[in-house]
Length: 526
Ligand SMILES: CC(C)=CCC/C(C)=C/CC/C(C)=C/COP(=O)(O)OP(=O)(O)O
Ligand SMILES: [Zn+2]
Image 1 (cartoon, rainbow, N blue to C red):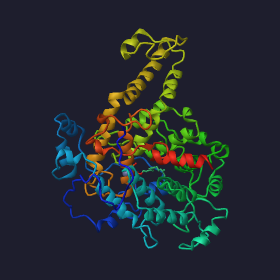
Image 2: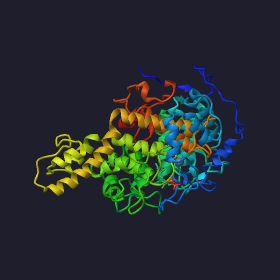
Image 3: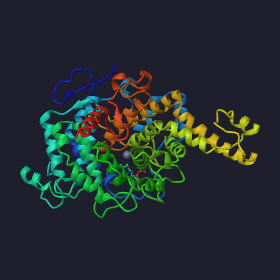
Image 4: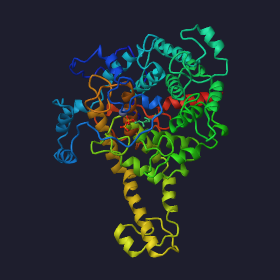
């Protein structure tokens, strides 16, 4: 039977009543505003994974050397070999750890407390992250749903109404009456802005629609103006086949994903929106194997997720070089067990989703991956030397009898074997369980804040963005080997107490699976 935390409305007593609350660190209550400032594009000391990555154009330059202190590989290996997880915690956090079971426990009630406090800040006087308010709704509501909770109906309605006002575009004034808003929503401008009266933007449109799907009420789903949204998407479509973020805005893989994800989940995806898009995404896959934000840029986990998910949604994933992509993502998991966003950068909790999500997607593409590996070897005749060196028989390597000379065959097989060695372990059952449990260890020990919320890494502040993507990554890794959707994960796949188990997410859209099914049914019937 499936283990779930379902439909506990926030504000009611906790039926489990078994949460152990750690002593306050003194950072509490008044610190929520301070936490927000840590996500503010303008005030974030380290812009790493700031919300600017979601809203602004990003052209990563070659990675600068980091000043962040980190353990050396030798130190980590030593600590690991001696199984001194406590020591790792102490060195990373600078304080003595609580007991092991407390460290590995998901502090549900504290997370809910932190998340619900954030909802109070969506009103018109809330200036920090002013252009990101639908994102705040999504990060918070999705995190709450992952934890198996939901809001009181009145609070949910407030969010629906707030987002409805964000659907009204730049030619309107904030705080207008609902009747005026309804009248003006009939005009040609679709899409959601970062706040009421702001210009529509693809990123905030994605955040708003995912929030409404997460809320899932009829009122929430019906509030989405699909017809005008489709017009908005067509207006954002560029002649290259890609999309731009907003009128006159930048063209990149993020814009492609947000447009296609929303169009797909709302059942308004058509040939016009898809035309030429696969070619654009393909031109963003770099020599490293990952996907960049735009052609000739550096591969990055955020864009790799967006690019791969888009290709799957438009049914063109087989055009990507999947073995190289998987190779690249797998090597982004550092010795700290978390993922980095790109080569030579520090690991960070949010990539648990962007990189972990890419692996979760690739896992479903294994038949295509195998086919691509085999196709790259058609006609190759393995030599005895190759078989000995690489430990694979011709049959295992999927080789045909071929016409290539020995040298050519040899070089191809070496390349092939490198891929086999890196890709097979990534998807071999026990090995992958170990990798996903290791990722859970990073999230629970290094990103989780025991007072509630999640952060990039020790030494940083918690924020809603990292809370959302750490929880999303945690859910994906807990469920990564559950088999058919809906099956309960094996206890060994869930690090810490089994009560840590989160709701499963749909890896293409990053909404809770049940919410996706409900909305799919709803929009298929329209
Ligand atoms: C759905 C949607 C809008 C997705 C956005 C995907 C996403 C997170 C893209 C990342 C953008 C980027 C290049 C960040 C680098 O920031 P950095 O240089 O500060 O971080 P780093 O050092 O970890 O690379
Ligand atoms: Zn981050």
